Image (tube, rainbow, N blue to C red; front, side):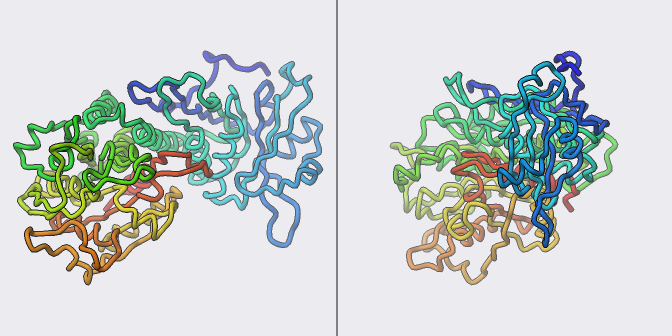
Length: 532
């Protein structure tokens, strides 16, 4: 069977195969094209670069890994004893384990694939399949055509997990001025024994949301000013039905009273702005609850006059991850044409050191008139979020309000790098977000809103103090959440502190090194499931 040309290859009916790169970045990456193939015949892989077949880990009480659909057929077709190969290489079929098997050079005649891959799918759970998909993406970089039977017979939720893992691990960050980056992901992945369905299109949209969030977050701050992010929001929303973008510059923020955003951005040569992105469902859609997502958007954080140590400052281009995540979630909701109206608010500023920087000891009046005593200019995130939350409460009429932020080092100290801290007193909202977390593998841990700690917000010179005084109750992530709660107007609200999982120091399964885009899929799945 000859290798199909670009013009003859089937297309993914979702039409959503590429993630747009930020302006100014080079080394554009394309998401692999996922194509369902109804036939499960492994001979469809003739001429392919790779044929990947699944192998499960041995069940309890047994010692040998278990072949899954297509593995035995591939062994017969290619004249291989996969059991012996697995035993020789100590391949156990654990989730994400890969064993590459080069095939005779005679296969270059198109009679078979160039390489066989045994792909470990572990216990076959959604988590294991997501990891298997990620491993396949990394093992096939540089390939043009990959064929796999790993999706054969999977229920939609498991197939989606596999596809998302594959697409997420295929990501590489934008590279400015570099032409020889990492090998590109596979161009085409054909999944045998599957048919076109929502698992494909929704996996692509969810993965693309994460790609968008990663791209924006990974872009260097030498490029990424607040207004650059605003321009990216406009560009990404252009042509997406039902989406409108509004940008307020510093002059408009001053007129409206956004004191927190203006104070944080005062020391920078690049002025702040606030971006609002609204998605309105198609006409005729039954009314649903209005969700407002607020994302911290500090395009670089020096700490201000309370300056950070050099080592802590290096990754601070990622301090606008929350804004990137909520933008990506709203665009994803629009691409899926969800019945849920969703609005994202992005308060964007650079926290720099300058002659006009705000100072420890200052009192700042945020939107709505609340005065805040500044104790530490490196706690700038809660100041821009205060403005944005008040704006959401007073002008956007949310039924549900969720903020996302790389807010506190305390959250990552307490929970490490793989869990986000989730704060909410709303039991139904908690369970909905937990359910979305379980479905996407983006892990959250509920943290307490300890009422006994509210004294830490008391000030002698203002309505509130935004950072606890020395000798306070501790629990910096908790007191930050309590501070934010003051600006939610008593609405149904959740706070997601992604300081830990928002960044990664190495590739791990579907997570890629650097900006992770954590939360984009979680929020999108929550919206898909019908946030109520």
